[in-house]
Length: 149
Image (tube, rainbow, N blue to C red; front, side):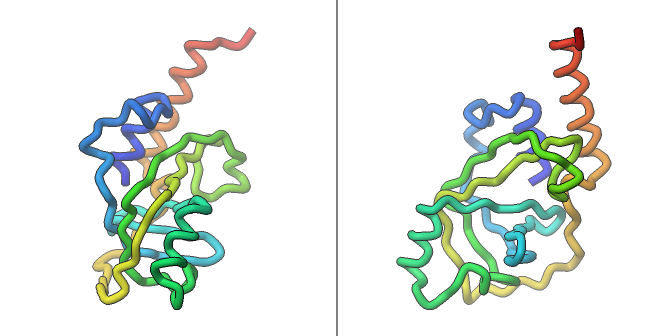
């Protein structure tokens, strides 16, 4: 996630400019499913936001499974995108410097039989010092382009 989210910042929040090689399906572990749906790559966790279509498709394929029951399960994000949003970081814990990058899931499937035993406790990507520095650099460049009057 760190490489992907860093690339999103380096492309000024334009998902269409991210290299095609980074847009492959993502196999991830569900760290938490309620109140926030958090997925992890084993190192960092980020929130996943599902489109209505993704939820409907999931319910049509897995009618006996509720999305909140996916806690501690493996899912594959087949179609997804990223979007950069301005938020209040005092209210959104998966943000830094009032910037949040959202993982928008359009299609996914659950691997209900696959079990993972994480060997480490993943941390919030937005609390990683290196990633926070990347966001600070992005904000600094944005201020230089549009100085205060």
